[in-house]
Length: 129
Image 1: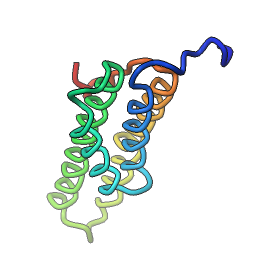
Image 2: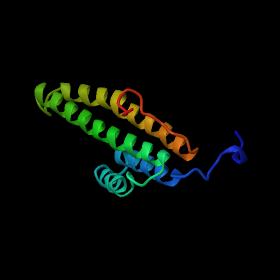
Image 3: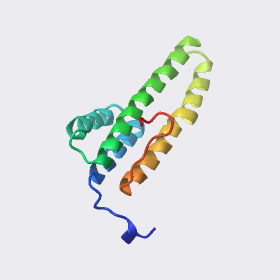
């Protein structure tokens, strides 16, 4: 698709892009800080934002919360299998990062691409309808 065919004037596109970028930043660069920024953006914009932005905001906040739950589950699994000194720790960490974390990042990259294109996106399985 040529650049001239993309519609960059879709209402809410900037907010949608910001939400997806903050979601990815939370997973990869500045965890926690980017999540707080995403929550602030959601609190500020979710009621008055256009449909595109509202959808991306809802998706990124919900999936960020799911990502936190998955991280807690992985840490609980480590503790229940003998703690952080156990040889099972690295098995759980590697499984978590190769399945959960990388999938969340991959879906976030797709969500960012959709936001940049001015299109809606629903995260598979864990994204709200």
